[in-house]
Length: 187
Image (cartoon, rainbow, N blue to C red):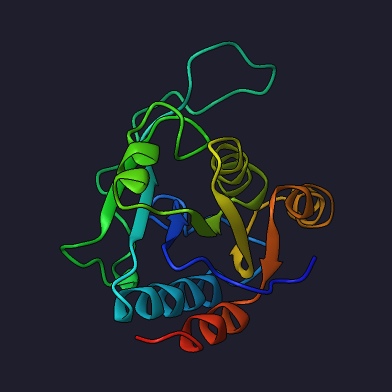
């Protein structure tokens, strides 16, 4: 289903566009991803809609087959990229799992603002973005994914999420399509 509408109370969630992650070798130029995320944030802010900036500061406990980072992260690793132009009214959520809803108060913060839909962008498509989208969907939010405002270091994960997972969680669109829908309503 193509992106057709945005609810009156829609929030933007930008996942993990932080200093420690944006330097990784993503499949799409990270500068383009940040630029589109900023365009979305500006459009939401202009309409007094919530903007959620998410960073990650750890990982979920438990054993995995694939080794995880265990050494301390460099100073500033969790700092959000300044290009997002963080504003005082933005909601900032620090997560310690892949998704932004697990073990945070994000769901309660959004529901207190009567948010019924979320637009999600950021990195990495197959982990932080997908986990956040799954959790939002499971929490009852309508979900929209800004496909050109996300990337991953793993092409197969990026493409799998876009083709197979996201259409089952909500609607997908481009940054421009989302901004156009926002522009169609009164500011």
